[in-house]
Every structure is written in C-alpha cells, then in structure tokens.
Amino acid sequence: MKKIRATRSNMQTFITGGQLGAVAHIHNILPYAQPAAKKMGGTSFQVNNRFIFPPNLCTPFNYNQSQMECINLISDTVTRPTPEMLEAMMQAEVGDDVFGQDPTVNRLQEKVAAMFGKEAALFCPSGTMTNQLAIKVHTQPLDEVICAHDAHVFQYETGGYAFHSGVAINPLAATHGKLRAEQIAAAIKPHQDWLPRTRLVVLENTTNKGGGAYYTLEEVTPIRALCDQHGLKLHLDGARLFNALVETNEPVAAWGALFDTISICLSKGLGAPVGSLLIGSAECIAQARRFRKVMGGGWRQAGYLAAAGIYALDRHVDRLKEDNAHAHRIGALLAQLPWVHSVKPVQTNIIIFDLVNEFTAEDFLQRLKTHGILAAPFGRHTVRFVLHLDITSSMVDRVIQVLKSFSW
Ligand SMILES: Cc1ncc(COP(=O)(O)O)c(C=O)c1O
Image (cartoon, rainbow, N blue to C red; front, side, top):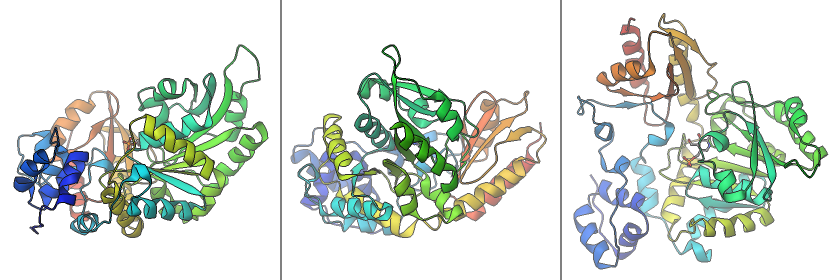
C-alpha cells in the first residue's frame, strides 16, 4: 500500500472529521496520525468503522466466516473510495469553507450548479441535510408538504420536517413511490384558517422504498405545471437521480429546469465517501447556507471530500448502468424462484422483493449471511438488495448461484 507523509494539513482532517481519518488509515499513516492529531488539540480521534476495515471483509457485521469475501448489498452507501479517488482526495487544495474559501468545494458547487443549469449549489454532509434544507427554505411553520408515503423525507429523516421547519406532511399513497399530477391536485388544501397551507411538493427519483423506480421528464412536466398554477415549490430528492438518467439518457439540465431545488447524493451509487448537494437559485442557496450553519453543518477543509465528489461525477456516472444491469439480472432470477412471492419491477440498482409467508426476512438474511452475502430487511417478509460500485459481475454470479441453491 502506498505510504504518504503525515503532514500538518493531513493531520487537520483528523481533528475536523473522522471520515478522513479513514483515508489516512488506508494510506498507512494511522500510527503517526493519532498522536499528532492529539498534540494538535484534537479531543477525540474517531474513524468511521466502515473505512478502517480492509475492502471486501465483513468484519463490521461480524458474521461467522469473517474472512470470506463479503458481498454487501445492504445499500449503495457502503462503498469505499477507490485508490484513484483517494489519490484525488489527498491531492485536493483546501481552505476554510465556512468562509467560502475552500477552492475544491467551490469548484464542486460551481460544477454541479452548471450541470443542472442552476445559479448555485451547496455542498453538505448528507442527503438528509440537503432535503431538510430544501423544506426549510421553501416553507414557513404551519405549511404543508406533499410527498409520497414512501418518501425518504417522510419515512427516514426522523420527522425533521416538523423539528426544523414546523410543517406538516401530507403523505400520499403512491405506485412504486411515484406521484401523479392528478393525485397531487386532489391533495392541495384550500386556504382556510383551520388548514395547513400546501406549499411544497417533494418528489423522489429514483424511489428508494418504491424499489428504484424512476420518473421521466414527461411524467414530471404536468406536476411542474400544477405547482406553477397553485404557487407551490417543487423539490427533488435526487439521491439516485443519475441511476435513472443513465437509463433514460435525459439531459441533466432539463431536470434542473423542472425543479426549484434538487438534492443529489455523491455517497450512494457514485461511490464518494460523504456528501450531497442542494442545487437551486442563488437566493435559495444563500438561505440554505445560513440554515446549514445553524444545523451545525458549516464545515472547514471539506475540499478533501469535495475532491472525491468531483472525481465521482467525472468517472462514476456512466458506470451506474452496470449496477442497474446487475440488479436486473438478480431481479429476473428472483421472480422465478418458488420461495419469492413477488418482486417490485426493477428499473435501476434497487431490488425489493417479498418472500412467501413461511419465510421471514430475518431467516432469509441469516442464511444469506452464512454465504457471505449481506442485505437489508424491509419488512417481516420483505428484503432489499442494492447494487453498487463495489459489486463485481463475478459477485453477482455468486449471489445468483447462492439464491438458486436455496429451497424452502
Ligand atoms: C432517497 C434518499 N434520499 C435521501 C437519503 C439521505 O441520504 P443520507 O444518508 O446522506 O442522509 C437517502 C439515504 O439512503 C435516500 O435513499
């Protein structure tokens, strides 16, 4: 493994962020880094477990054959930076982003804003933060947000919409996580003192809980028209937008034109270790920047992470097609297996399927684990597989072989 010198600028990252401590580990400088970081005033020395284990070992999950090559289908967030990405990170020119002086963060933000044809973008630690910032920017307390019942903003963001923004959610039943203009129209509330005011619509593309389904521009255009007609803002949770766009070949800027704000994640299929961007008008992003600060999200030499994002956008978008193709292969097999009750239509890199009644997700996942395959439960009989950068074709062959070997 390549060794690098533990310089002062490298050490700073240990104090400001555990995630980058992992980079140092991979570059074999942990033994020098820890004492040096302490000496420089770091109070805690944290390394994210996900990164300190060598690639392809499942040690964090502690299953009984921990030396077996792991096939981790729990999420596309489990990817580790490639050596080339790490190199790009270590070469990054950095500054203090709270003062707007990190050149690599600025470059990433400008690049992403330009891709979407928007005025500005804001680099943040997570997709949860970018979604929450969008809700905060577009609403006032007592407003209401319309989204799908399955939407991440409703299901998995700790009720942050109420906490940060004091708004209500109107979650609509949706097919594979996708909303239609007619059902949104029917959900818009009239202006009455006793009703929350409908202010924002949030769409998710691709849909996570909906099984990786995607919207097309044609499907979103009438929703945009409806929002314009009723003075509503439209936000896109595009955590996995690029998994959709490699299938549809739709232009990124056309997506930018349809939404007031868009959140994209670099830390999912794109394979960066951390980071999401909120994209929108200069005014929205200036406001979001203040709210990011009050949420504790003002960060300093974040350019190391932004460099991973730039690398990912340049090198890892087209290859998302491979992940989608891998998911199609596994999905097609699952649909034929007698112990599988149903599989949601596979469109991108997510597969959600139901097992027959006698087979619980817990039992199934235990059996998979003995073969070195990890996945996530999504209900008593429901399982999710997510394909990503660290899953090779030969791993997919092995998953298929293992699934074929199961009988129930
Ligand atoms: C659709 C969707 N949006 C937002 C997020 C939040 O991203 P983060 O984990 O970076 O907060 C996720 C996370 O998996 C997601 O699947």
